[in-house]
Length: 139
Image 1 (cartoon, rainbow, N blue to C red):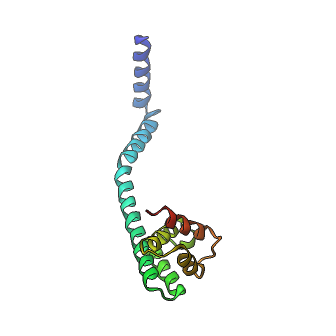
Image 2: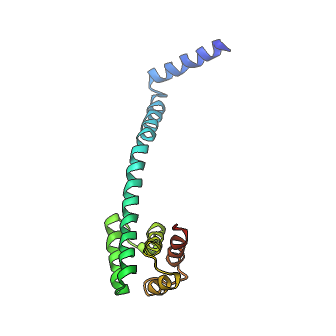
Image 3: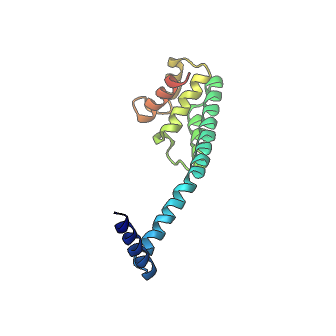
């Protein structure tokens, strides 16, 4: 068995030297290199996502505490989402969940939250469901 392993290594070396298999070896090393660097990109993205959700929660908290115009609230959420690169915040689960979390943090009751947000999103929409989920999941 040992001899066949050495033979395989010699064939692979010959193919690489002749240029036949080098591109696949090069592709593999690039792939490994990318996967090695992705954890730092991933943690950076997680930090940005966490900061974004925190801003949405804070904005929602302020609205829940002070009240105001529902359309202005919607535009404010939209502006925060645009800065994050989200063009339709009502279809973004993390945005909608963070809104519910902000209302929960503000101590808004379920009916007050529902009444305030019904003017912003349809209650049976995905966003409406995600807002309620964020509200209920927040401890």
